[in-house]
View 1: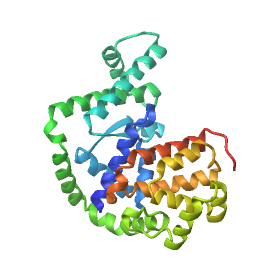
View 2: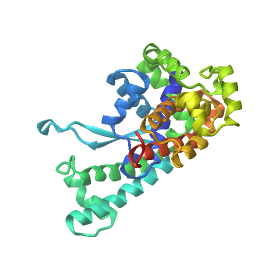
View 3: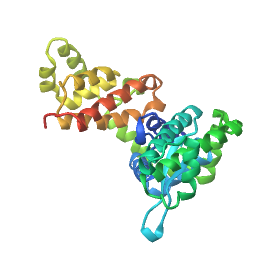
Length: 305
């Protein structure tokens, strides 16, 4: 189970790395809090988990902002999966960003290698500035790409998985996770929404049978009045109807903030079950599409309260 937890954290970094723009690199100040909340542990253990993933060559850590005690600036790292395709994509993006930002700030258009040569000696003075952060990402992603090509044998799945177990044993992660989070996580998932492939019983069988029958007879509005949004969403998730829920949100049939937050909360539990439900894992993209749709309508679309 502890390996599953670390793999899920890796998958979350991978998912974010495939987003667009700056948000594609999760930053330590936010991501450590995410891990702490996800598995219910303190900051110290969350940081140990990240270090295990780094030592296992599962992910890279980049100093986006260096610590500066004199100015009370904390260190902030960015996390990128050790996947050559992902690293190259992000490198290209941040190199392009660096060229654009450099031209805007210094009124000079240079090739990326010229910009890096010019900026590199100034990195310390550019600490905690936007161009400094982009430069750190562009430079280090290029270094990581070269490193992976040179030491390719250390980035095979087998090497990383074998090393992961060694690093976990060394840091005693399995025992710490078992004590702190596993029981809580399992209970939280089953209490909220257990897809049928897991054997969960979050949806009462008699009530579900009545729901299935009435769903064919009544319009959606009436079904929601009878059973409520909570039960309705549980049934849809239990049956892997992620596209259906996304369409309801897109069409405005589900638009109240409380309802969107309910779906968002339940999806967190669903994502945690990817590694335990082989059928659910096939719907990964549909789950994330539903999540993106809900987030868009939560934060960017007018809706009912």
